[in-house]
View 1 (cartoon, rainbow, N blue to C red):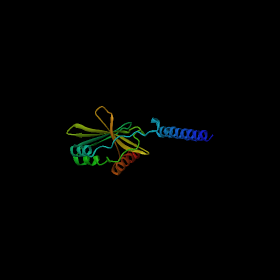
View 2: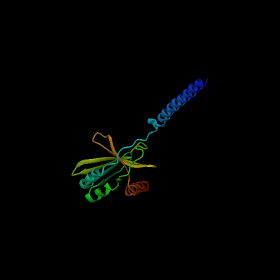
View 3: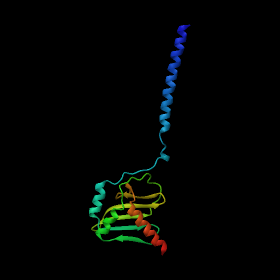
View 4: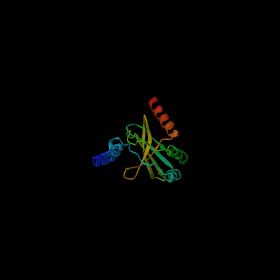
Length: 159
């Protein structure tokens, strides 16, 4: 009888360990986030990428979709100032809003970079696209960029 009791205890412990290990594996799989709830991110532009734009840019075009205006910055000093609108802060979710237009960085008449401009509540960032218009980098707008766009939109609304 004592032997049967030991077999029962050992069986119970083995079964308990098996249940715990299965349950642990199950909780691991439930911890993963479904693709629908994951936020889309892109890498921040590397410093050398932004430095290259800053050094080479001599002309910037701001083309705003669904508006009747655009902005061209035609002198090197002001074009370089526009590069400071790009931060090196990551964007948490690049899918939160459609873009309002594009910022084209040019050097001696040749395009060197293109960034989509996203500007709405909670979504103020740039997405750099490659030559095939595929997203490559994303960064938040700097404080200077926020002030610039606020000023532009206030002027447009006042007219």
